[in-house]
Length: 250
Image 1: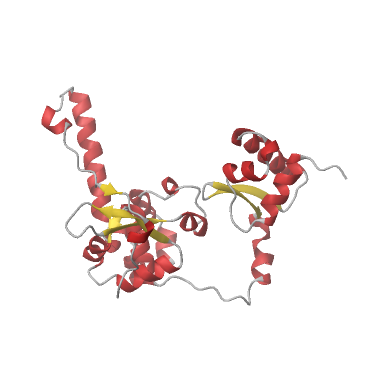
Image 2: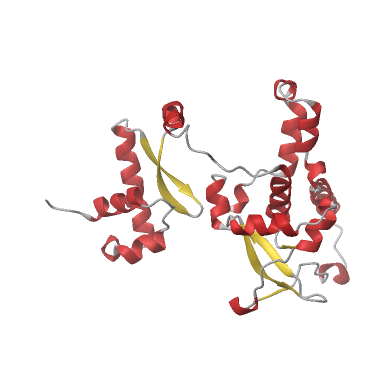
């Protein structure tokens, strides 16, 4: 049997239970060429599945590639795994994860300020489940740890990169504009899902305000002052060694 590089790449994608990126595939199969060429090989495999009316397809997930079953087969597959118990995130876990995802990098104190409650336990749980990780330390008194999402977070929610997260304004409009969807929810559930409940509404409003102000300046051809142009409100982050990382305490 003659084995070619496209078959090797397909076998690796099939055998892996996590997404494989071009760099990893190139390390395993150097004869496959550059990452750009590997992407072409993967496209050929996916086209073959499409032509054969295969139940499989290849998607880009968490910065890599993975073979998955098509949506049409979800009914039967869900029956296969019906007996498996799946641990789900609690409401407070989802709230905290949403805050970190949209405002990362962010400190535990900032999360607690938004939620209004202690976040030690939920941050520890999210860290143990590999949904968030320590990204560095903020240059502030005490050098607090900064948290952000992981690649597994992207995989868990079916995202290729963090920019694929829905915009807060889009979520707000969806929840308030879909009458049929609203009718399927009770008021308590609806209130819990709105961005302002998660403390994220102010960020969306600030972003819209900044966009409007920028547009007005451009339309009126009003130049900003040197002081305004030199303002830097970005968070300073310094690299840390693994030995410096401490697990959050209760």
